[in-house]
Image 1: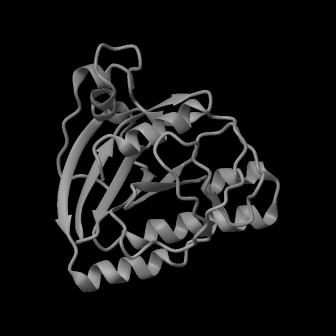
Image 2: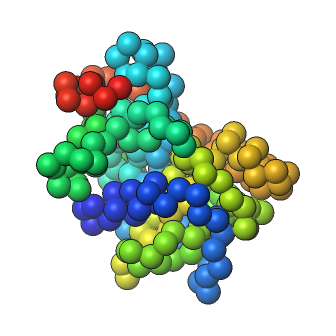
Image 3: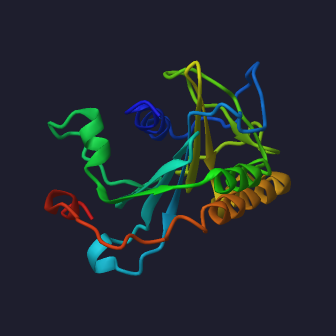
Length: 223
Protein backbone atom coordinates (compact mmCIF):
# COMPACT_ATOMS: atom_id res chain seq x y z
CA UNK A 1 0.00 0.00 0.00
CA UNK A 2 1.29 3.44 -0.84
CA UNK A 3 2.14 5.30 2.35
CA UNK A 4 -0.69 7.52 3.44
CA UNK A 5 -3.37 6.27 1.04
CA UNK A 6 -5.48 4.46 3.63
CA UNK A 7 -4.89 7.24 6.16
CA UNK A 8 -6.22 9.83 3.72
CA UNK A 9 -9.23 7.73 2.72
CA UNK A 10 -10.35 6.80 6.24
CA UNK A 11 -9.70 10.30 7.61
CA UNK A 12 -11.87 11.74 4.85
CA UNK A 13 -14.56 9.22 5.77
CA UNK A 14 -14.44 10.25 9.44
CA UNK A 15 -14.73 13.91 8.51
CA UNK A 16 -17.73 13.15 6.28
CA UNK A 17 -19.75 11.35 8.99
CA UNK A 18 -23.49 11.54 8.33
CA UNK A 19 -23.47 10.76 4.62
CA UNK A 20 -25.71 8.13 3.05
CA UNK A 21 -24.20 4.68 2.63
CA UNK A 22 -24.42 2.85 -0.67
CA UNK A 23 -23.91 5.67 -3.18
CA UNK A 24 -24.50 4.40 -6.71
CA UNK A 25 -21.46 3.49 -8.78
CA UNK A 26 -20.92 1.84 -12.15
CA UNK A 27 -18.20 -0.58 -10.99
CA UNK A 28 -18.90 -3.53 -8.68
CA UNK A 29 -17.11 -6.76 -7.80
CA UNK A 30 -17.80 -8.75 -4.66
CA UNK A 31 -14.49 -10.63 -4.64
CA UNK A 32 -10.96 -9.70 -3.59
CA UNK A 33 -8.99 -9.42 -6.85
CA UNK A 34 -6.17 -11.93 -7.38
CA UNK A 35 -3.73 -9.08 -8.08
CA UNK A 36 -4.54 -7.11 -4.91
CA UNK A 37 -1.75 -4.93 -3.53
CA UNK A 38 -2.82 -4.76 0.11
CA UNK A 39 -5.71 -5.89 2.30
CA UNK A 40 -6.09 -4.01 5.58
CA UNK A 41 -8.63 -4.81 8.27
CA UNK A 42 -9.16 -2.53 11.26
CA UNK A 43 -11.26 -3.53 14.28
CA UNK A 44 -11.74 -2.57 17.95
CA UNK A 45 -10.06 -4.60 20.70
CA UNK A 46 -11.39 -4.44 24.26
CA UNK A 47 -8.38 -4.03 26.54
CA UNK A 48 -9.74 -3.95 30.10
CA UNK A 49 -7.13 -1.31 31.06
CA UNK A 50 -9.10 1.92 31.30
CA UNK A 51 -6.49 3.58 33.51
CA UNK A 52 -3.89 3.10 30.75
CA UNK A 53 -5.72 3.21 27.43
CA UNK A 54 -8.89 5.12 28.30
CA UNK A 55 -12.53 4.14 27.90
CA UNK A 56 -12.40 3.39 24.17
CA UNK A 57 -11.15 0.05 22.86
CA UNK A 58 -7.80 -0.12 21.11
CA UNK A 59 -7.81 -0.14 17.34
CA UNK A 60 -5.99 -3.06 15.70
CA UNK A 61 -5.01 -2.85 12.04
CA UNK A 62 -3.86 -5.97 10.17
CA UNK A 63 -2.33 -5.33 6.73
CA UNK A 64 -1.25 -8.08 4.29
CA UNK A 65 0.29 -7.68 0.84
CA UNK A 66 0.01 -10.00 -2.16
CA UNK A 67 3.09 -11.98 -1.11
CA UNK A 68 1.78 -12.72 2.36
CA UNK A 69 3.95 -10.17 4.17
CA UNK A 70 2.03 -8.43 6.92
CA UNK A 71 2.09 -5.95 9.75
CA UNK A 72 -0.14 -5.53 12.80
CA UNK A 73 -0.57 -2.05 14.28
CA UNK A 74 -2.32 -1.18 17.54
CA UNK A 75 -3.43 2.38 18.28
CA UNK A 76 -5.35 4.19 21.02
CA UNK A 77 -8.70 5.86 20.48
CA UNK A 78 -10.70 8.66 22.05
CA UNK A 79 -14.47 9.12 22.37
CA UNK A 80 -16.41 11.75 20.45
CA UNK A 81 -20.08 12.46 19.86
CA UNK A 82 -20.14 9.95 17.00
CA UNK A 83 -18.20 7.19 18.76
CA UNK A 84 -14.56 6.18 19.25
CA UNK A 85 -11.89 7.10 16.72
CA UNK A 86 -8.13 7.30 16.38
CA UNK A 87 -6.64 9.58 19.08
CA UNK A 88 -5.25 12.15 16.67
CA UNK A 89 -4.62 15.83 17.33
CA UNK A 90 -5.91 17.66 14.25
CA UNK A 91 -4.66 21.07 15.42
CA UNK A 92 -1.04 20.03 16.08
CA UNK A 93 1.96 21.10 13.96
CA UNK A 94 2.52 17.54 12.71
CA UNK A 95 1.95 16.69 9.05
CA UNK A 96 -1.00 14.43 8.12
CA UNK A 97 0.98 11.17 8.18
CA UNK A 98 2.57 12.04 11.54
CA UNK A 99 -0.86 12.81 12.99
CA UNK A 100 -2.09 9.43 11.74
CA UNK A 101 0.90 7.56 13.20
CA UNK A 102 1.16 9.34 16.57
CA UNK A 103 -1.52 7.24 18.38
CA UNK A 104 0.23 3.95 17.43
CA UNK A 105 1.45 2.08 20.51
CA UNK A 106 2.85 -1.12 18.91
CA UNK A 107 3.81 -2.78 15.63
CA UNK A 108 4.49 -6.43 14.84
CA UNK A 109 5.54 -8.02 11.54
CA UNK A 110 4.45 -11.44 10.30
CA UNK A 111 4.42 -13.52 7.11
CA UNK A 112 1.90 -16.00 5.70
CA UNK A 113 3.01 -18.85 3.46
CA UNK A 114 1.13 -19.56 0.22
CA UNK A 115 -1.33 -21.90 1.93
CA UNK A 116 -1.97 -19.44 4.76
CA UNK A 117 -2.57 -16.56 2.36
CA UNK A 118 -4.88 -18.70 0.23
CA UNK A 119 -6.88 -19.75 3.31
CA UNK A 120 -7.24 -16.11 4.35
CA UNK A 121 -8.46 -15.03 0.92
CA UNK A 122 -10.92 -17.91 0.77
CA UNK A 123 -12.50 -16.67 3.99
CA UNK A 124 -12.74 -13.12 2.63
CA UNK A 125 -14.63 -14.38 -0.42
CA UNK A 126 -17.62 -14.91 1.90
CA UNK A 127 -17.88 -11.18 2.79
CA UNK A 128 -21.33 -9.81 2.03
CA UNK A 129 -20.54 -6.62 0.15
CA UNK A 130 -20.51 -4.69 -3.09
CA UNK A 131 -16.99 -3.39 -3.73
CA UNK A 132 -16.81 -0.06 -5.53
CA UNK A 133 -13.30 0.48 -6.95
CA UNK A 134 -12.29 4.13 -6.88
CA UNK A 135 -9.31 6.42 -7.16
CA UNK A 136 -7.89 8.24 -4.15
CA UNK A 137 -9.92 11.36 -3.43
CA UNK A 138 -13.27 9.86 -4.43
CA UNK A 139 -15.96 9.44 -1.79
CA UNK A 140 -15.88 5.81 -0.54
CA UNK A 141 -19.08 4.03 -1.60
CA UNK A 142 -18.60 0.30 -1.07
CA UNK A 143 -21.47 -1.16 0.94
CA UNK A 144 -22.54 -4.19 2.90
CA UNK A 145 -25.09 -6.30 1.01
CA UNK A 146 -28.63 -5.24 1.83
CA UNK A 147 -27.61 -1.84 3.18
CA UNK A 148 -28.12 0.33 0.09
CA UNK A 149 -29.39 3.79 0.97
CA UNK A 150 -29.00 3.37 4.73
CA UNK A 151 -27.88 6.34 6.79
CA UNK A 152 -26.10 6.87 10.10
CA UNK A 153 -24.07 9.53 11.89
CA UNK A 154 -22.26 6.90 14.00
CA UNK A 155 -18.62 5.90 13.55
CA UNK A 156 -18.05 2.52 11.95
CA UNK A 157 -16.60 -0.12 14.28
CA UNK A 158 -14.50 -1.76 11.58
CA UNK A 159 -12.96 -0.99 8.18
CA UNK A 160 -11.87 -3.24 5.33
CA UNK A 161 -9.51 -1.48 2.91
CA UNK A 162 -8.39 -3.20 -0.30
CA UNK A 163 -6.00 -1.70 -2.84
CA UNK A 164 -5.35 -3.06 -6.33
CA UNK A 165 -3.32 -1.91 -9.37
CA UNK A 166 -4.47 1.33 -10.95
CA UNK A 167 -4.10 2.24 -8.20
CA UNK A 168 -7.70 1.75 -7.12
CA UNK A 169 -9.15 1.10 -3.69
CA UNK A 170 -12.34 -0.14 -2.06
CA UNK A 171 -13.17 0.86 1.51
CA UNK A 172 -15.97 -0.93 3.37
CA UNK A 173 -17.16 0.56 6.67
CA UNK A 174 -18.60 -2.19 8.89
CA UNK A 175 -20.97 -1.17 11.67
CA UNK A 176 -21.45 -4.56 13.36
CA UNK A 177 -23.71 -4.28 16.41
CA UNK A 178 -24.24 -0.58 15.67
CA UNK A 179 -26.12 -1.58 12.51
CA UNK A 180 -29.32 -1.79 14.56
CA UNK A 181 -29.62 1.94 13.90
CA UNK A 182 -30.38 1.14 10.24
CA UNK A 183 -33.79 -0.42 11.04
CA UNK A 184 -33.37 -2.91 8.20
CA UNK A 185 -33.27 -6.58 9.19
CA UNK A 186 -31.35 -7.72 6.11
CA UNK A 187 -28.73 -5.01 6.56
CA UNK A 188 -28.28 -5.78 10.26
CA UNK A 189 -27.82 -9.52 9.57
CA UNK A 190 -25.18 -8.84 6.89
CA UNK A 191 -23.33 -6.27 9.02
CA UNK A 192 -23.05 -8.68 11.96
CA UNK A 193 -22.03 -11.55 9.68
CA UNK A 194 -19.26 -9.45 8.08
CA UNK A 195 -17.89 -8.40 11.46
CA UNK A 196 -17.86 -12.00 12.72
CA UNK A 197 -16.25 -13.33 9.53
CA UNK A 198 -13.52 -10.69 9.35
CA UNK A 199 -12.69 -10.98 13.05
CA UNK A 200 -12.32 -14.76 12.71
CA UNK A 201 -10.25 -14.58 9.51
CA UNK A 202 -7.24 -13.05 11.29
CA UNK A 203 -7.43 -15.13 14.48
CA UNK A 204 -4.71 -17.64 13.49
CA UNK A 205 -1.99 -15.04 12.87
CA UNK A 206 -2.94 -11.79 14.63
CA UNK A 207 -2.95 -11.64 18.47
CA UNK A 208 -5.59 -9.47 20.08
CA UNK A 209 -3.09 -7.48 22.17
CA UNK A 210 0.57 -6.54 21.58
CA UNK A 211 3.32 -8.23 23.58
CA UNK A 212 4.72 -4.80 24.46
CA UNK A 213 3.72 -1.22 23.76
CA UNK A 214 4.81 2.40 24.07
CA UNK A 215 2.26 5.15 24.70
CA UNK A 216 3.57 8.66 24.03
CA UNK A 217 2.84 11.09 26.91
CA UNK A 218 1.24 13.62 24.55
CA UNK A 219 -1.18 10.96 23.30
CA UNK A 220 -1.85 9.59 26.80
CA UNK A 221 -2.98 13.07 27.85
CA UNK A 222 -5.84 12.87 25.31
CA UNK A 223 -7.26 9.63 26.72
